[in-house]
Image 1 (tube, rainbow, N blue to C red):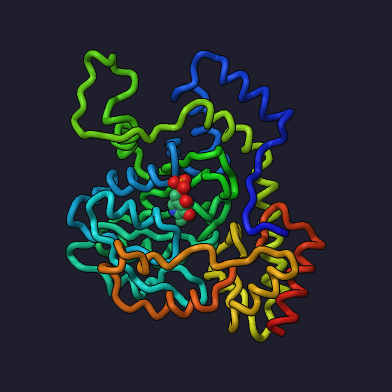
Image 2: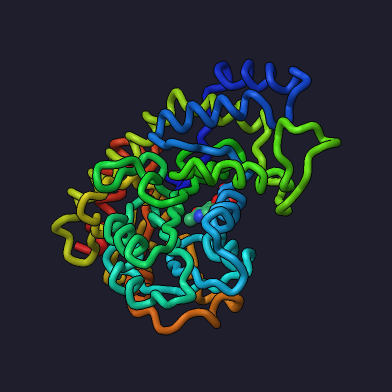
Length: 363
Ligand SMILES: Cc1ncc(COP(=O)(O)O)c(C=O)c1O
């Protein structure tokens, strides 16, 4: 089977000495390895202030808090995402307000976001679903007009670009995930990227119980309770060892994605998801929109190619359903949605085989 997602580890001869060095260094908790990773990751992906976290979920939770989201506030969000985008909004005590998506991109429709704004709105949370950047400039303009925060969930979009900028630099806060099957993994882990340096101190305290690092433990004073969301040196060692080759891996996702975009441009029963103007996706998954997604999925699976919808629109969960009205854009996108493998493990022969099977069922 060609898998839809795959764990990518650095070669053992590269990873194991670095891991062994840290494991037996006597310093396995948060320390220099973590801070080196933060600097290197920020430089490589064009992020000004990158904080290493224990997960993308922890990074999101802290992102909402440092952007001032409090119990009772509204956060405009999308249903077309993995659940942590929205469970963290509930975790803060805020209300997720589901705006509709563009049925051809799966990403938040700025017009729908504009209509959902009320005096209770504190933030917009945008997801670059499957690695396809949303219309960030339009969302930035809405956020600025209303004086609210824009938070980018970039869990699927490492290495993507929007409006000529690296992903994660247009929002007030952005998060990345290094969970097992993302473009880059550190087993688990994440990054919180902040535009405004003045939020860094609170973010650092929130990731570690509310304590300030560097102040003697007998003198330090917790003024805001925090969490255990810090990255450790062992995780950071794995993350650092990913950095020298992650660019090549992402480049292969992009090459395969563009290949599929060209191959399916004229296909009648299956169209590529639309790439928004100015967006340069990093194609974590390839998004195909089919007239009969079930038939295409069955044919691909029979040919040894894993394809699926992967996620459930979040407003269909019982805990989130009370916050959603009709979302015809989500329904239309999801009915036609089929994710195809397009990562670094998909070689030229694999992608030709994928195209041939799709074209046979959806000519
Ligand atoms: C869109 C999205 N946001 C957030 C997360 C949370 O990331 P993590 O699993 O690192 O906590 C994930 C992945 O699980 C995700 O897919």
